[in-house]
Length: 191
Image (tube, rainbow, N blue to C red):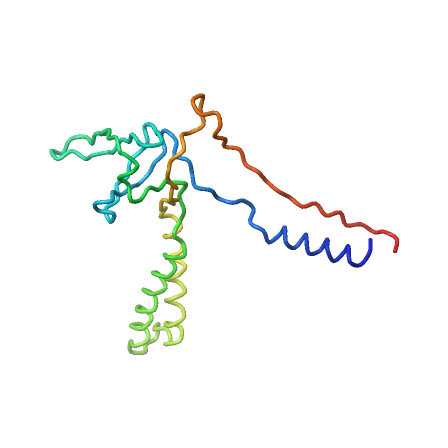
């Protein structure tokens, strides 16, 4: 293998390693998916619902409405024209909040460390340096653990106009993925 071929192979390998593993297209809403949406009249108010059926111009959803008398909540169906929506998102997963928890815990630790550092010295009282280092670190660690346990929904915007889900009525829509790869064979050769 010549020197220029090795260089090209190395660049191709580096480019394929740095390339994203997949492109995340707009999710296609399917029956049973959890969505949130807002209307053009008031785009700041979000509603959460689950999809019953999807058509290109209308989404039929069910919203869980709590009882005003203390009884059980009810699933209430609604038909929403897509032209009236300002925002439409699909829940694509859940994630923990370890980073946010570490920041909050570290902030609380700094405040507690400040109070600890200003206490009168005593036999079991830590030094001011121990207070200003120990409390923020332990607060950040505790916050990260608690934040990792608290899960949040991950929402992804749905691009409109909507496509109908894959089915017998619309066989042209496909849910297949396309992957591109690079294979580099590195071996010993003669010069």
